[in-house]
Image (tube, rainbow, N blue to C red):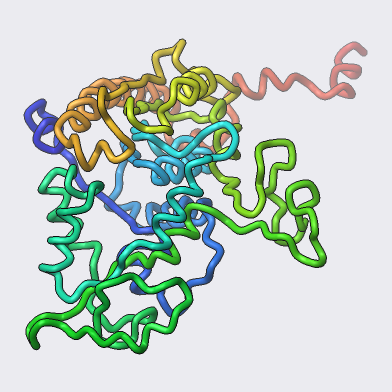
Length: 370
């Protein structure tokens, strides 16, 4: 995208990326204080605070780009502050009507995934053989190798040893005996633990003695966001996706949705829902009818299309930004012209037209007739 926009005369001032509190480098910094109940609404607030803190380095226009859960984060941020981001690019966002049925499958796979290797070289070999990773663009895999792993020991794995098989969740890992091949090799694990990954996908809603029917009568103290009218929400659910879907009509920034024909999140009904509802409510962008919402569906693209089809994804995103940056500039000129029409010393006051529209108090009107 950077090279494509630069070729069109667009310069990017800065690119800001923030790991959520329980993932990536953030999880390394926070590992001693992390809990087991992450919310998708935490990170939008963190992004808001980050932008406010670095506001001198982040002038308008600000563009939000998010994939999967990241798309949900940016949508929530835009609902919190409608004019903060000028446009959104949401790549297969997890924002759907009802519950995401595939979360169970993802949770099971992630809970049992291998997460330790005797060295970075061994980890790379394992990733390259994986059906998921071997389809990634090499540049993306290189970035993954650089940023997704960390050396042992960690809080989860305090012993500097490696295991050729993934331990069961909750197992005692202190007895691992397979050592690194040499003193120069350091065992590695994932920065984002599989525990935090799984808990990001789904939240527990279990039967307890005090709450024997959590699907129909959830605990109002711990589970106030359970939608008892929808699909099964027991023993797991994830409320944020459906909650954001219901708020799509009020989304003010323009939106480019990028879908993939092979992603279950890009099913025809999910696409139709987003195009029908995004931005059409009071305070929204105007939606598809106003040219403020558009979609592109990548043929053969799966959920991980930005990692696999880097060029095609960049082409679509760059084309959208060229259009939206021009629109932002035109609107900026209009707003500045309106502001300039009022003398600086009067900008903090009610205008003459404002006062006139208020009219006279009733008592003054009665006196004027005498």
